[in-house]
Image 1 (cartoon, helix red, strand yellow):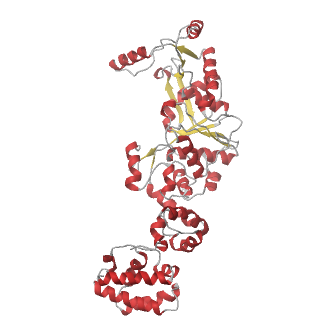
Image 2 (tube, rainbow, N blue to C red):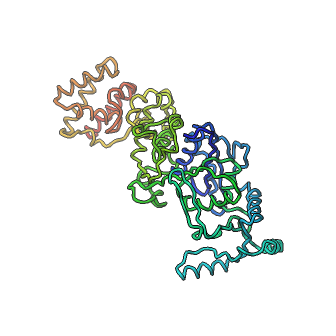
Length: 495
């Protein structure tokens, strides 16, 4: 376990919305910071201006807030190392690029777009990996500065050391070695003066004192470039931690954009955090789910709160092996965390779903039905389908469902009529008052309880599946119960 305070960052690009991969990266960074008494920093990396999505930054921040991952420093809260949006740090990045040029670690490149395109075409024709050929690498610095001062357009390229190998240590994967001959002199500053990600991220990590870079494994190919930049400045490196990739539920391959788009419509699932609340998942469940796709507390514990994750987290127990997404597990964790909520809290959380369905259900009324549904729902939105009938003036259903298997309309009508008479004779409709005589009636009529109670359930709730019948009757007012039973009688009479 890391004992010294960790300074970590979650640095999303606002080119898309927050998904579970990004959320998991943020979570692991957050856990390490909180466990060590360090700082969790949010930094927006918007160097790819052409691909920015207008509302992505705010959506990403809202997603983190919904999950309960609050940052110590960031665009909205400030901090000693700001600004925390990369496009606002342009002058810092430009100065560091020029510093590398002065140190002989980078150079001005004046190659025109047409030359580079022709070079690429030639290399592809020869079946070679396209890469920059170092055409401007050895231009004397004084000459390059004069050409730049004269207004000639140029970029700055990093001068990759040749004829050597670069080895970088990853905490989970050990040494990662790359032959520098496979790397070209990559651009770090564009002709418009804007930094590319590789330079901007490493400069900002150094200036912000980042101790651990915990990020997606998609960055492994860029790792040698990042290490070379840090080493060129003579800076120390953070601990590198590249996480496992997410596989689609089948376990075969990463999820494609098309499959991701179809998930919500076809299966009622999503990998985007913005959809999780709409789909009725608890943030506690989402955190539990993503935390265990790549990390474990031990070999047996699978239900964890955020506080328990903070206490138990360790980088050493991260698993670099690919993790298949299981929405069944998400549903499981959601149900577990729903059952762990205090009734008052569950009533509060399901209210927006009743409001959205146009049902006038105040929290006090919802609190009365919570004991009936809490163990029966896996997502918050299921509360409406399970218990919406409590708040509807009218319920609709297929009258054919009033005739259980093994009965006909006449026998179902007779059984319903006897039930109405019996319930009407009772002093109240409390559960202890209604269930014993109704079971006795089923026996008298030589019916299975499921047959008789099935008629009553559909008549009273409009549903084949509902909360327990007699607890439900007890919560509905007497007038509503008998009005719905009477309506069922008319159905069975064919009226």
